Image 1 (cartoon, rainbow, N blue to C red):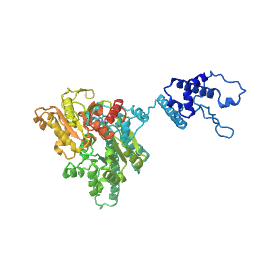
Image 2 (tube, rainbow, N blue to C red):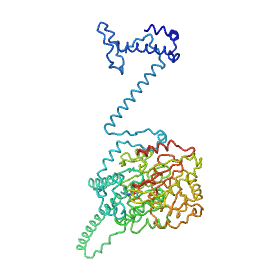
Image 3 (cartoon, rainbow, N blue to C red):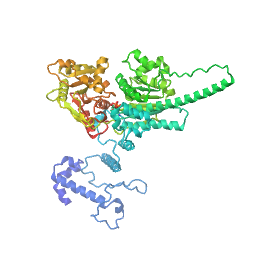
Image 4 (tube, rainbow, N blue to C red):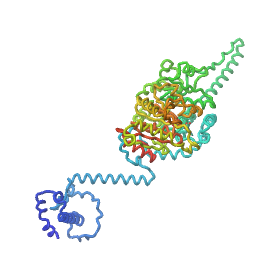
Length: 634
Ligand SMILES: Nc1ncnc2c1ncn2[C@@H]1O[C@H](COP(=O)(O)OP(=O)(O)OP(=O)(O)O)[C@@H](O)[C@H]1O
């Protein structure tokens, strides 16, 4: 048969003798293929049936050709007597049909082996109930990878740990604090603590208890915490409740101590009086409180957040009785002074870092009694612009500081690295859904390049708003009723300069829109924002005085704010159902914060991203996919 094949393919053989690869030359020839197969068969059957070891003992009976090989993944050849590996003898046609360098073939084989090993390990891990840290590869997102990654295994473990906590009563909070949650926030009476609160409150309280029982003398050193939880998950209450609890307990302990001292002094005076009847009356105890020496400081990045956190702190203080002073550069100097230097003292100061740092420069005593320092939106407050003033306050407060709590919905890699270096023993309190946008928020994409917009983004934005405005109200199970008639839409742009331009265009199209940035008129800004955060009375919507109302075509019952990152950080826009991303955000951090203004606290929401020329459509696609799967954005 071999002879037949040789004869039928004389031309090929001649070429082979010249040393040219046969397959390259005659891949189309049927006869050649037959010849090649025959040669391969011959070579492999020799190799399997007569391995070098068995060929050595030719007198032994030959194994049957029909036995299946049990060395398909061939082991390396055994070393010879002198230690060198035994080389397989080359067949005359051994290099026939080779199109690759043997070394490369071996490398590829090795790579295949390691991949197979990895997939084997993955299967075992999945069988054990462990999920892979990243089920899908997001190529576009990987390129802008900025966020710290958290393995899915740890997320499941945290979920399991907190599932037993069902109500606020499960926390060892003081009775007055428990009552304050019910009185000040009646909506929460029937709600359970959020995952952020379940993770943070016991940890922050636990540390207090441990310290109190272990060592009555004040322990030196600061206990540091990082609370990382998704947007709209109730982080404010998560840090505020344990802080107020600690302040009140400390106050009670101080009062007890003062009472004891007073009793001792009275007893001593009584004894002195007995000894010396002419002794003067002891001076009355100085019961004056320290003005402008708070026990807790809460730092936030904007004046709007100062007002928001201040409102929550004040509402709790009606029941718990403590003094909170929210101060920001938007308030007059007199108001700031009155709040800080209140003759009844102050317990909690809420401020932006630059303002407090400048006050601390002229009044260093303001930070001398601080035991709790909370840095909300920590990723912003430790970035380049805020870092100097934040660290200055931190350093000045350190001598008396007992607890440092950093809080954020996004932990960028630079922050993670900085924290690991600065506070290596920091307690990290992380929720299972960190860096994920909840599934109840849907993301729609508008291709601006297609008809009818043909690249006109402003037109696409106005049209999208009109469509939302004209659609009938949605039923929201979290609210239990139809969403409010007035629709509030947030439009996010990347550059501050574009806010005015886009808002102006929308007004010209009959949309009640307002640009919101640092230089906007503060009174108008506060009024508009109040209607978005739900702090405004519903009746105020009735009179429409917006410039858009003068248009021939006017979209009623729809309010729009065009803003940048300023509006995306921490502002509790509970009444917002729609967010339009006019520009594709630069990073996943911006995606998380901007889309986080809707779908807060169990509500539903919708994000619409306008993708135009030059925008990263691949990033949008992957964000959409990750949101659909409920996965974290890397
Ligand atoms: N346990 C709870 N049940 C129901 N609602 C709650 C609960 N805790 C807080 N809330 C409400 O949830 C909303 C969001 O809270 P908060 O602003 O603290 O979220 P956040 O995690 O700080 O958000 P962001 O990351 O965007 O700053 C608030 O309106 C608050 O009143």
